[in-house]
Length: 404
Image 1 (spheres, rainbow, N blue to C red):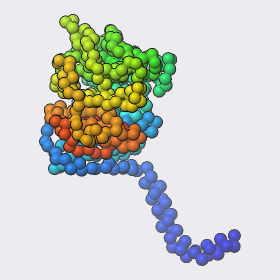
Image 2 (spheres, rainbow, N blue to C red; image 1 turned 90 degrees about the horizontal axis):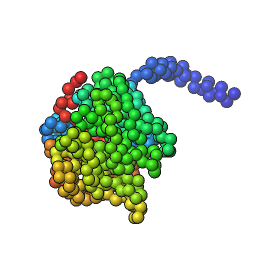
Image 3 (cartoon, rainbow, N blue to C red; image 1 turned 30 degrees about the vertical axis):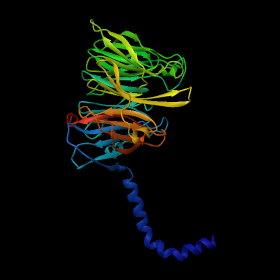
């Protein structure tokens, strides 16, 4: 105690002088602690020249590894307001300082409908809805284990696994929720197959690809058909085990991918087309492994990764399918060294008019990925670092800049 007293006595002049300022600083910090803390996005100049077009940007949703709570949103500015193209990494926190820093656990889908941007955050059980022009949050919809979203007639349709993330024969059938896109209220729902994935609208019917992924090895094989007027399942179409992607082309045909059972049943691309009565009939399938795809005009661009148990290696593929003739017309999107060096091709999106395209590389799944841009002929243009597991993207057009 005597030693402490001498220290205080020696420094009491300092204490008398600075203690009031110290206390004032503490009070100032206390009064400001509830203010918004802005986490600024990273702005990267890609060096590539920007060209004016109807497409003004590209949103990239980074999944983030499951359980890491690291889903983030990036934006590639293609507006030609600057002489070069800029990539803005992790913009959600900056645009929404009152929200938590990251979007949540596993970003599973991103779409634009009208002037709103929809972000499906799978394991966080929510769909975030933002203004498309700047990603400022407007609200959210709580949906359990949500997967994908599509739209028709002023409504959003969201597929849901319903149950928790758990393998087993007791995993429940999935559901599709109907959401009013203006009020963001759930207005209806319907039970579909097991673990539903992507959906597509043809006429007044919604087609849902069911995977049954939680019920391995007893996968689902069906596409559920929902009448949008009654919100009831009117048919189930048997296609193949473990369905995933479901897209519609300009001829009203459905293109559905099956992931197989990872052992004997391989991944394939299936097409369904309407008959004279408008009923979807299963056509033939193509022997290509498709992880992601994008349809522009008569061309279906695809990338694929399939594990080969004979070689114990991932086998990669890419190419173009002519949707009118149901034929593979190219077995490589790019012969560039940059494309060959990609570690885990995970997503693809193609410019709707220019036909240049972007590939998303997930790398090792736990660190930053990359977005690579290729010209229409497959030559490499530039690449930029993204968040963890870049997997989903959507173009922002001038129409999406309008306010609600």
